Length: 379
Image (cartoon, rainbow, N blue to C red; front, side, top):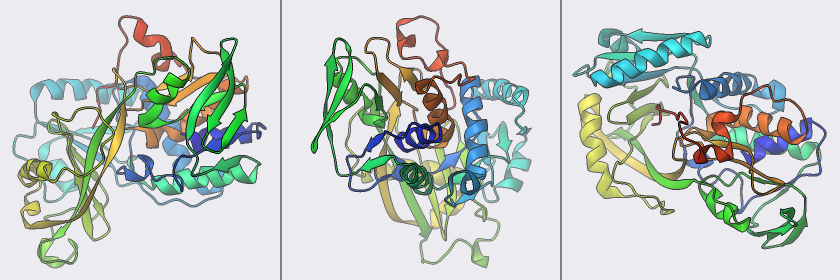
């Protein structure tokens, strides 16, 4: 988010910008730990609009930003088992189609054709969008950062923000481990750490960190899933399959398969150590939905943090209590894929341009109002 905002600001002529990164390298936090999925299949119209713009930019990233990125459009396949979820997804598909997205509602047999090897047990339907896919989070982030630097933006790494100075109720400086930066505007793009940045200004940013795991598996005897022995038992494309009612998902990653699942017992926190005791729960679901996983061995694993808001929608725009305090955080697991559009929208706001986007679903003060609609399709 920070790199995208910086690039879009530079494109609008605002180059007196400093991007502050706590780590020694960009994209080593949550950005570098996610599965890289990009999809149009959301339940909220505003998120669908973010996807349309963001995915179009990723598909044309090199010509627009100047850096090639790895992007595979092999589709997203949501598998639906519960009757209640079928009703929700049928409405979602209709909504997505009204926004011009070619989403198909499929039967179980058609789902197997797209993702060979999955079990159809209990599947009542599937939502499929061929325009969805998997992209490289590191490439997109570094591409934005390099493009911004080429236009004069300063990127400061290995530097921690330690405070924000306020004068007369507005931002006047940012304090870091390397000294202070005088500025009338600060953008809180700290992801899971956004709440802590908000505290520097004395405001509440309702974002909580939630650990999610990713595992990589290869055949138990080693090698690749692409050998003849596994023909028809494992997809060969990078189609991203999501068993929605369990939250188990997988896609091919080189010779292996990347997979994960949400843990309903996970509590907010910044711990990103791998909980190996959670793997058997994931494996049980994985083998039931993709039986070939019974022949798999996990080669490595990692954990990262989702940045969750109460309604699973992001916060984009100025905070209503502190002048000069902008927020772009809380994307609840779909931040990387929405970074191109979200960065453009915030840059437009900050430079006085009309973003041509209704930001009311993402306003910082929406949590004080009743009746806000959130995002249902969180994986």
